[in-house]
Image (cartoon, rainbow, N blue to C red; front, side, top):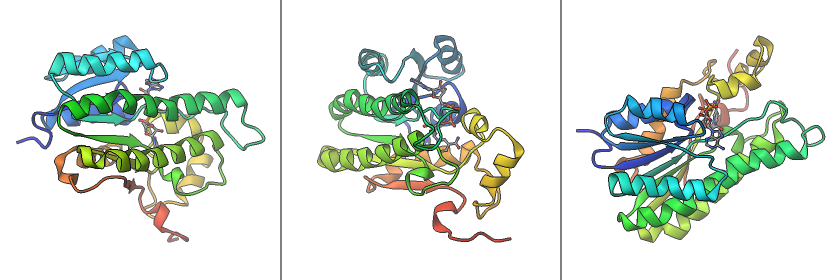
Length: 254
Ligand code: NAD
């Protein structure tokens, strides 16, 4: 028996990285999947490999496209149980407050914050019609701790995702809709590889990870699966940190 049997899940940013792996894993656990991402060919390819799935090209910044994404889930599969708000960006020129351009700030907030807001805005009524549901918002360990290797727009956007998640949890707790944030530590997907572009930068990050290694995408998806499924039925408004011990630690072992 699958851990998501009978459920319908939308996974944004499902064409690459952790989102793609999540599409495959959630499908293996019995969920029908809406693979949502920017590139129509990429979403079709991911969906084509899954037993019950549809690919939807969506820019999460666009209200009409997000609304259509949710409608597709309901029209195609009859209900909506899970929205996994995984789409996110980490622009390479995001830096200190002095160096980061206003355009980079706006773009980061449009995707990482407004995108999550819009997905929740349109998914919540569909979940309520389905008798409840689970929202999994991807924040980051940087929502909990500052880093001297700065990404001011990204870090601030993930803090906003965390507080948005808590408020949504409080508003909808009595309507059977849960909301939790998944806070991954560093995983070498294309998103992070672009930011930690050389070995010196990678080593600088590894020094702060007690386990001394980057996380695996599968380790994050395991957490998302728990939050999406009924196994976390008494959990809402929380932040699940999967970070190799980073946020628990002041000094790391030699
Ligand atoms: P990734 O770049 O591999 O995948 C992100 C996906 O989001 C891509 O497929 C991209 O096309 C999609 N996307 C970007 N903008 C979009 C938009 N406007 N509309 C729809 N889709 C859009 O990244 P990843 O590392 O797998 O990251 C997934 C999530 O995890 C992100 O929210 C990221 O911030 C977060 N995260 C990543 C790390 C890490 O170390 N990789 C750590 C903490 C949090």
